[in-house]
Amino acid sequence: MRRVLTGARAKGPVNESPPGRPPLILMVPALLALAFLVLPLAGLLIRAPWSTLGTRLAEPQVLEALRLSLVSATLATVLCLLFGVPLAWLLARVPFRGARLVRALVTVPLVLPPVVGGVALLLVLGRRGLVGQWLDATFGITLPFTTAGVVLAETFVAMPFLVISVEGALRAADLRYEEAAATLGATRWTTFRRVTLPLVAPGVAAGAVLCWARALGEFGATITFAGNFPGRTQTMPLAVYLALESDPQAAIVLSLVLLAVSVLVLVALRDRWTGAGGTA
Image (tube, rainbow, N blue to C red; front, side, top):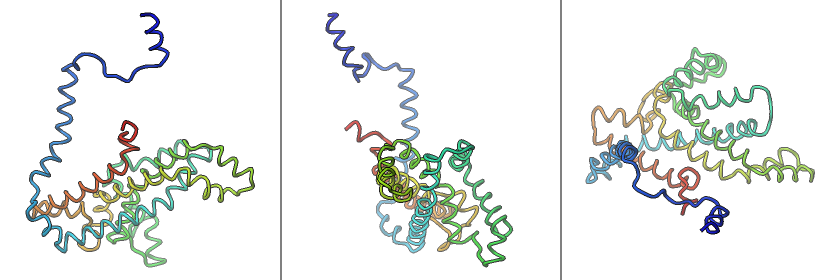
């Protein structure tokens, strides 16, 4: 018996469930939490007007809101990639004083109420804002209550997702490949383009998908900074909010579209965020 136990300890801990029934004091709140999270989604599916779903999705205002949402979320993701990847590289590869403060400031939009973010954007990029006043007077560019304002609002709230994902991938990447490229005479830009980016490509892709999904579902900063004008700034979440007051069935249909997008995002990122790939 002692030899068997010693052999079991040598192999390491066995990943098995503890014997016996789980304690009721944990099961009850766990099941309540699961019901709290699942029942609203089930209610959305149950109350959906499935018989008229195709007709409602083909309505002009729905198609216009969907088109604007897809275009603005895609443009916001492109901006996040252009500016967020270099920022993530800076935080992960360049040591400098105040790096913790910069990282904290980058993640502030994650916890900042979106409406507050919209107000902050107005104070900076509005017609009387710190930068917006100069843009209006010098170039005649007005950003609030325009489609460009929608893209900027979505970029503001979505970029931290990309930066965090890419920075984590950069910190996990093996530096020996970059060092080998440097010893072969590659410049920093060549090393970044030919070695670093391919190494962290999965992290960049995951961050881009999260960024796109967050931009697609943005509401507070968009309605505060860009308004809710059909065909110009009314995205899908804003259309849901407006339809909920006049046509609840249309609001359910629009919500189903956003729910489907969320499920697709989870499926695309299951290996990274849910651990399904590691346990299969």
